[in-house]
Length: 445
Image 1 (cartoon, rainbow, N blue to C red):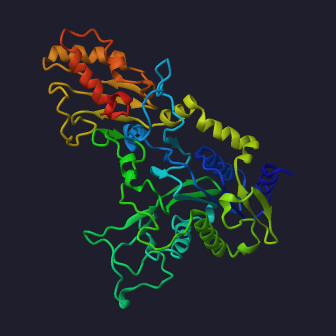
Image 2 (image 1 turned 60 degrees about the vertical axis):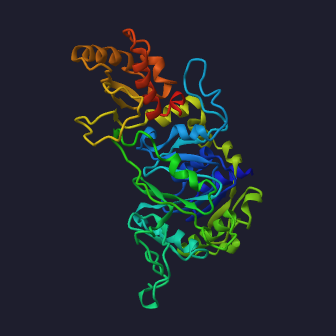
Image 3 (image 1 turned 45 degrees about the vertical axis):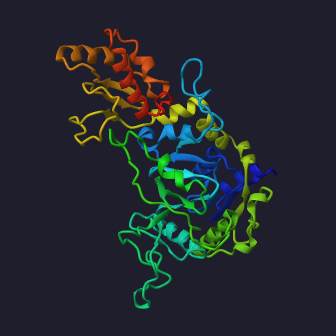
């Protein structure tokens, strides 16, 4: 029987425990395997799935990609912008561009790369808590870095301060406190793992990241810092920003990701009272052949890879994520309603930071979008009230029902307005501002 056939047979069996490590670094494949495990494993089973992805950004199900991601910075990290649009002007992904993916679970936006281990635990909802599996991962991390703990947001952080006096140190088994100081003005905890959850009637999914040795750490905050943040108000879930770090920062350990996978497997086995020695999980799993089996403890385990694309449910999930225009539709058309406004308005009265020096002082920009489509706008460039009113009507007519993701540059849309002599430059500046806010390549720089 093929690996895919054996995997399908074991996943749909009544086995109580499953442990799988993926050799694939494709985020679409790994998320589809994860979803398959959530949908197909027995209601009473507990599953551990570990995987490592090529660099990508994964946003939560209810998040706004224009609010969470700096699209212009993403494109600045790849070669020339040629090929970013199709002949019809619609946005197209490059093979060397960092992917932005919307997952099926909630939670915040995270960055994946080859120095980050992703873990997923699927279990009966009756036995699920938001801390249980984070505590499991902390026990694995502490074999390498004793500064790890679970914080009040169920994330895993490292306490960066000096060792506490002996009388102030907690019990070593306490996964919510460490023997190190934290929260001093200069020593804030560093987040190394964030989590997201998906709860159904009978099943619970907890998945998270583990920044072991990410080489992209200096850029992560920039990838996830949208220029629209102070001008956009959105429904849905907004990520909570935290200082981040690597588990191996300031550690002498040369622990590899594959070796760390084994530490997580060991922690899972301890939690479930399993014996890992009979699992089909050889050390150095990144080089191991794909294999899936079960042991005498009725625990299925193994190394999986792209061969699971032979399972229709997994291949269709990958297709949904990776087909260029279809994936962009899924990424952007699922976006909850938002407004973008250059100045305080009734729906968003927050003070705004200074606008660019090139932004026309008399201009006002407001758009409202839902499911990635502009449903109304209020844009003017003139100080004269009558002229501004006429401009608002013209621009609203041009922008109504336009899909933001299909716009290459807002100048291509706004230039269609019947402009008075000398207004082209001002309208161009408004278009440029929208391009910068919404990550269009014309707005770069």
